[in-house]
Image 1 (spheres, rainbow, N blue to C red):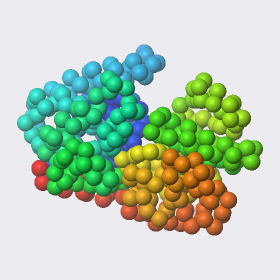
Image 2 (image 1 turned 90 degrees about the vertical axis):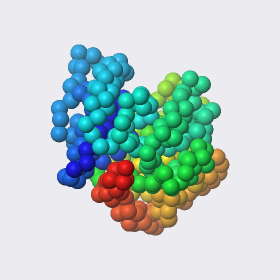
Image 3 (image 1 turned 60 degrees about the vertical axis):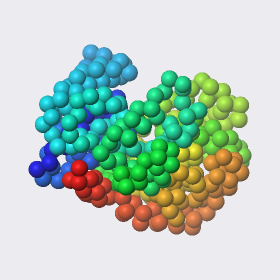
Length: 358
């Protein structure tokens, strides 16, 4: 029996998020001939607390999660470090890029690289941001590297001069177990996730202003944080304030938003994989995607593509989908077929093969 050790990093920092969902799916679905341990005691992460056979502590006396996650990180960090020093495992799989364990590790470790955004677009991040630096250390030291797409593998090889034989592509798996709620919002375009920098939200919004002006009943629903005062000022400047809605959606509500949207638009300049694409496919939602990075690799012919730097291209792509029911149905049908290629079982099986080879 092979024992895999996972550390605390992302489970301390996130309540929700694609990285923690990936690791929770992997850990929960490991076959019986693999033993697993997550080296931590504190977590409010939705995915690991629902799937892992252990009750994690929380600090309920505090309301501010930013403060709590610092405490979780501090306490869990000591536990992960102690467990690594004890050396009672066969393979280590850290959940993020902190290289703290290199001082103590005596067994092989594998690192999953989810994207190379910090390396491709360093200007989008503050000068003190050290993710690229510490990631490079781990990528060079790792016994093996998992890349979540061929595009991510290509970037690792090109940007860090890593031997491609050291990298295996393992696509994310997707399995929707929660039913959608019944929330309805009329006709709307769906934007999911963060709206910062490389997510390209503001150029997307500027591109569709003519569409919103021509159809005052059309809305744009954004999941994630509430709009900032700067965003509200921008919406007012474009005279579209009443047509923008921000929703902090749980998974059930998110799936409903996909199911009832005219189209899901993903205008990012770069992604390592793009889990929302699979979410849209699984919920019968047509997608409009950037024609960059991993998007064509993941969605192939099940999306309408645009140049994310060209407002006319963005607008034209969206109009082609929302104005043509036949086009929408064709994309939905192709998405249903594509989602079959991204199974949790295949993701776990391919990852286990890597564990066994180390």
